[in-house]
Length: 241
Image (cartoon, rainbow, N blue to C red):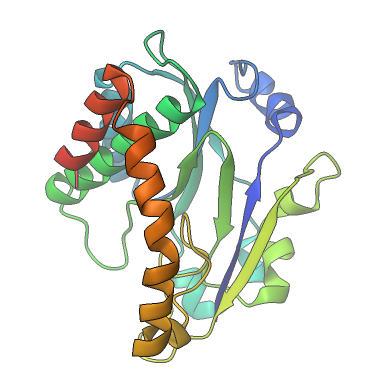
């Protein structure tokens, strides 16, 4: 079992904490928050964070600061506790060249992919060490772990804070069938809640494809006349797969 919650974060909640950490947050929509699983070893963790910071700078955004996510390790089981990573949040400010919120989301995606690829290639992490973005967005944040559903609010005190208000909360618990539970395999993922087996049947897949074909065509018509910065971002997204 590995539950989690994807929710729309509220600036007022984070603004209170980060002020004590020595930095301030810009207006909502002007920054993104990343939730990361990192190695517990201090040297490896700092090396991982240095990769994130370098990639943020190279992509023209501003790293505002880091926050240790409050956790209660005693709330999870023995196996989960032995594999538990360091859990930190990174705050990234919008760069001067970022035109709008969509452009910011695209840039955060590039940062996540670049940092993940470079960290996994260079850090030589050994199981169960992790470098994993649960989420990196200016809209939503994912709290998850190798837990049981009732352990979530006990393990993450953030979720019990009165100021932790949200307009969206998507909760899912993964029941492991063909893989062993782990911190990074917990649901939800960044954009989907579950890989439900029902979507694998031929009839359902065919129906979904036909239903989506109209939207794909409309999307292509709309973005064929997109501004040059969007087309450049689209090529950049292809480059970092």
